[in-house]
Length: 469
Image (cartoon, rainbow, N blue to C red; front, top):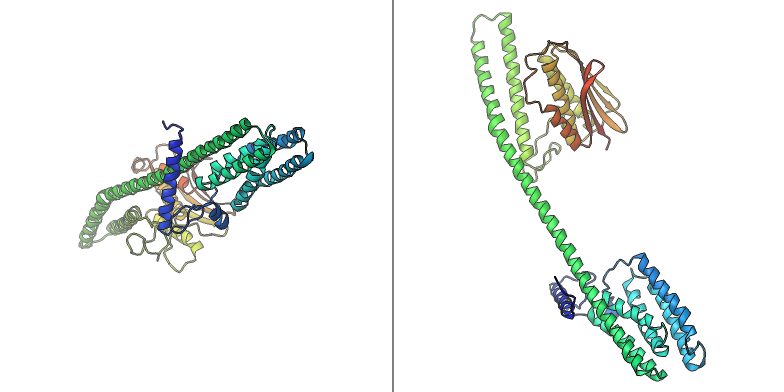
């Protein structure tokens, strides 16, 4: 634990002066630094001429109220002390110094955000308050000098604050010696001024340490954020490797085998209607496999590159290569308006779904379409893709309705199909990992939206809602 000693205060002040001098010598003339262009600390006159380096302190309203109460006590009690205001030369001097101190104190209490005025008023308070304390040493007049010395020590560099304290003590001693103040009062109040100044220096040292600790904490937070981002990028790279090694290789093998099967079927001399249907299915499977490989490649690129989701034509910041468009974010025709791109992409998805079987799909767009952005458009596309796939697996042959509704407040995607009769599940009903809807909910949450999937009035309904903006 650090002890509150004068040594700590001096060392902290010296260390801060050394850092400021080095910054100034390096050409860093930032505001609030106390020093000249040649690296030397400013003096009192330089502070007045070039602007003071007052440490920013957020004075609570309660402290301002206490200061006001102390000022009222001084204004009430000093006139009641001996000598009274206006009684002889000493009484007139007390009245003048009291008025000057009160006016300067009142203004000083409300100009904390103007350092030059704050310092000038503190100088006036020090001279007037010190003289007032010397003229009326047996009253509460010394409170003005106490406020001056402790404020100077807490908010000003040592070279400037010691000048203000010396001014206050000198005014007090001169006025006290002229007015015949007892020696014990002169010694006692002088020690009080110096003691409160030392207390202000201690408070300033602790404030500087608090500022440095806050800066160190901010640097630690930035370092932690950088480490977290690096860990996230490393995890994304690991996932990209797994996708490439597992899914991409598997799809490539399936594509090769489908091409071989298509070649063997083409070599069959007698092609009946059933064989033609088989060839058509193989061709469609090959096309879907190639599309899956393209989607996998885009997913790997999105994981490897932080430019995922940018519009087509933009250049990747990390690889320097043009970023590929993501599914659902760009239309089949680049000339399409941005508001129509998602609609055309969904129509292409529905056409593929219809071509793969005999399921009737109804597609409706309500309201004027608007651009959603790459990430949100991808979320809508993936939701529609997953919903159509689930309808084919769990309710084969049932009609599917897909509706996109645009309102001023949000955009809603609604996919519904009748629940299949019991015992009529398709052969793919138990295929998959079972995490499709979970992934869709996560996508919706990342896009600030919501997704629900549940039976409603005999229909299985998937509803995605994304807010506008």
